[in-house]
Amino acid sequence: TNDIGRRMNEHKNDVIDGFSKRYHMHKLVYFEEYNRPIEAIELEKQLKGYVRAKKIALINGLNPTWEDLSESFI
Picture 1 (cartoon, helix red, strand yellow):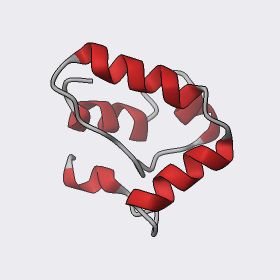
Picture 2 (cartoon, rainbow, N blue to C red; picture 1 turned 45 degrees about the vertical axis):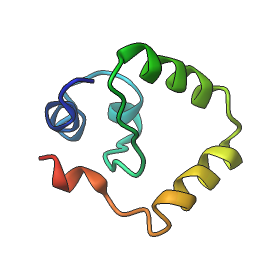
Picture 3 (cartoon, rainbow, N blue to C red; picture 1 turned 180 degrees about the vertical axis):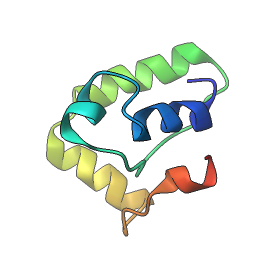
Picture 4 (tube, one colour; picture 1 turned 120 degrees about the horizontal axis):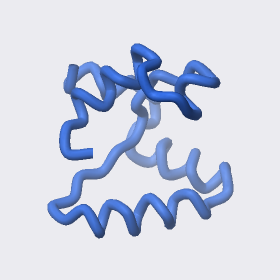
């Protein structure tokens, strides 16, 4: 997204149909910023291929308390 605050607001208020709305997942525990959209898309595809344990290890490495990082954007 080019506006993380808007996107988090959409997810937290269940505006967007999908995973976060269906499973009531509203915490942002991991994100990366890129200058070029193609780089972000490539990372997203790579992350989707990771097994759950690898995704959890990635989050734990950068946000071990699983703090909701969206608070600084809304």
